[in-house]
Amino acid sequence: MASTVNDTTKIVHLVALALTIIGALNWGLVGAFDFNLVEQLLGAYPMLKNGVYILVGLSALVLAATHFANCKLCSSYTNSSRSE
Image (cartoon, rainbow, N blue to C red):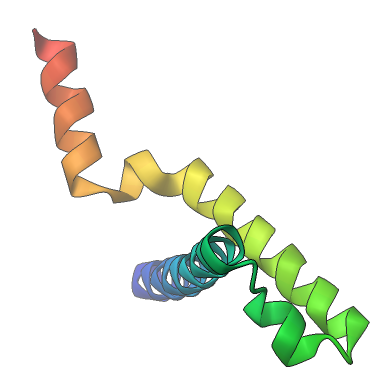
């Protein structure tokens, strides 16, 4: 049963990471070139476009909430700074 939880957690993490990267790249395009790729691809489907924005936002929340537990660099840094 534990591997199912770990597998599910890994899948959620990977999906959240992919969506957050997509969102960040889209914001980079908006800032650098005033070009919104999500709007260009899904502008004709406003509900789908909004769904993508919502999923990207939720993905950022998932990563923010779970980052320190999942990140080896951050967890080693926070553990070493506690021992000092």
